[in-house]
Amino acid sequence: MLNLIWVFFFLSAFAVASFKLLLLGDSRVFSEMVAAMFNLAKTAFEISLGLGGVLALWLGIMKIGEHSGFIALLTRALNPLFSRLMPEIPQGHPALGSITMNIAANMLGLDNAATPMGIKAMQEMQTLNPRPEQASDAQILFLVINTSSVTLFPVTIFAYRAQLGAANPTDVFLPILIATYVSTLTGLLAVAWMQKINLLDKVVLAYLGGITALLAGILSYFSGLSQAEMLAQSALASHVILFGLVVAFIAAALHKGLNAYELFIDGAKQGFQTAIGIIPYLVAMLVAFGVFRASGALALISDSVRWLVDYYGVDNRFIDGLPTALMKPFSGSGARAMMIDTMQAHGADSFAGRLASVVQGSTETTFYVLAVYFGAVNIKQIRHAAACGIIADIGGILAAVLVTYWFFG
Image (cartoon, rainbow, N blue to C red; front, side, top):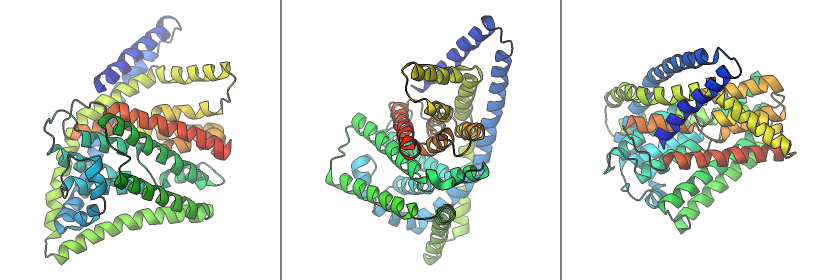
C-alpha cells in the first residue's frame, strides 16, 4: 500500500506537470518540483535531527518510569481493555505502559511528548512481532489510534486563531472535540472489522462508555467557560498533568532507592539512534507529497471538487477548507500552513477559517506517523494500516465539515 501511494505521488505529479508544460506553457512547474524535492529532503532531515533531542528527553523519562514501577500502575487500569483489543500483548508487558503514556500525551495535545512515547511503544511491540518486517495487529491498531488522535486540549490551534484576530479563538473547541472523537471511533471500527475484534464485549463497551462520558463531561465543563478561561485552563491542565507525571516518575524512583539520573541517561542514549533511523522513511514520504503539491495536482483535486459541488448546486463554503483537509494526512506542518493561509485569506471567524481549524484538530498526520513509527522499527509491510488510517481521516474530516455547519453554518 505504501509503495503504491508513494509511486502514485511521483507519477501523477509528472503527468500533471507535463500537461501544464506542453499545453499550458508553464515553464516553471518542473523547476518548482525539483526545488520541492530538495527543500523537503532538507526539511525531513531537520525534523529528524530536531526529534533526536525530544526523543532523548522522553525516552530517558520513560526509562525512569519503567524502573520505578509508576508506568505499571498507570497501565493496570487499562489492562482489561488492552487484553481484548490487543490480545497478542501479554499483561504487564512494557509496551502497554508506552501505549498508555502516548495516548495520554496525545489527549493533552502534547505532540512533542507523544511521538517519542509512540516510537517506544512500537519498539516494545516489535519484540513480540513474529514477522519483524510485517506490522502486527497490535501495531496497526496502535498506529490507527494515533492517526485519529483524540485531542482534549488543542491549545496550539487556539493560539493561531488568537494571533489571526479571531473574536473568540476557542469557539472551535467543542467542534474539534466532537470531530476527533468521531475520527478515533471510525478508525477503531475499521481496524476491528479487519482484525475481527469484538467491540460488543462487555468490558470494551464499558470502557468506550466511560470515555464517552468523560468527553461529555469535559464538553459540559468547558462550554460554560469564557474564551479566556477556556484557553488558560486547557493549557494549564495539559502542562501541569504532564510535568506532574515527570515528577511522579522521579519521586517513585527515589522512593525505591534508584539512581534516576543514570536511568535517564541510559534511556536517552536510544533517542539519537532512533532519530537517525527515521530519516530515510521521512525523506521518502515528505519529498513524494511535496512533488505532488508543487506539480499542481493537489490544487487540481480541490478545483475538481469545487466544480462538482457547484454543478449539483450544493453549498460550496466547505471547499475553501479543503486544502487543510487534503494536506492533513500527509504533512502536519503543511496542513498548519494551509489552515493559517485560509484564515488569512477568508478571516479567522469565517466559515472557511473555522472549518480549517476544526479539520486541523480532527485527526493526525497519517503518513507522517506511518513513516516515523514503522520506520523506527524497520517495518516494510504495513498491511491494512494505511487503509484504516485513511478511513479514520475521512471520518474525522467528514465529521469536521458536518459539525462546522452545525455550529457555524
